[in-house]
Length: 346
Image 1 (cartoon, rainbow, N blue to C red):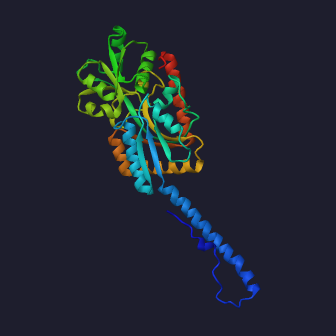
Image 2: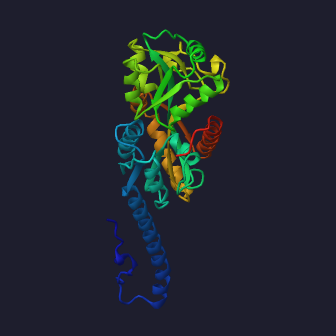
């Protein structure tokens, strides 16, 4: 704990008891000035020390072990070591991420409570009544990483391209099935949007997560799955699954032979899982800037990049107003998709 000694403000006794009154008057302003300067420096040091030793909490509004949780823990560990601070992760799952997000929105705007957000952050406001507004209740810090989505089928499937799958869906309406995590997840909305644009009908099969959906595909219980890259990459590389297309705006570097859905005739189609960090609205700009610097520095660390890419998470590091513009774009995109596909409110 930092303390300021009161002795700083007490003028030491004169060495000479016979000093003149004039000499005393000359010394007082000098001593007072020096005392004030020292006191101010120590006070500022106390504030800085208090800030850097304060525990910073990252709220993850989903269960442990998922992409958001793993990312938050990697970054918390990296930043804690690099900045000599204490940063912890708290999981607050439930109600499609809204419980943890609402808790973060009510936190004091002092930089001690952060939120990891993802597409559901801008999807939920279009489907349910919330006690917060994603566009006004938070201040964006950084868009951290993205994870491409892949449309995959079993390697034994007769469908070798996206056109093959869609042509079959036209011939057999509502007979083919597509599974994903859902409902009302980003992958579900991406699926509904593709069906709408292609003017085909496939049955949507929701699962509690991507892993059970992929397991169902491996067992030939569903026709296709739309899932994030890390959930299917190893099975694709092992020839257990076949990638028909990626929903990303550009081809995945590790899978250059897999075309994008946009390249297949659906211009501007894109859907990716993304993760960012936010703070409650009205957090001072100086704190937001400091946090952005910490997170971008952590993302640029070589060992961090390697760990993230192994998990299928690719660094972005878009911060401040640029991240805010991205959030607005995603909010508008999902709102439009939900209206066009008539996805029911929850």
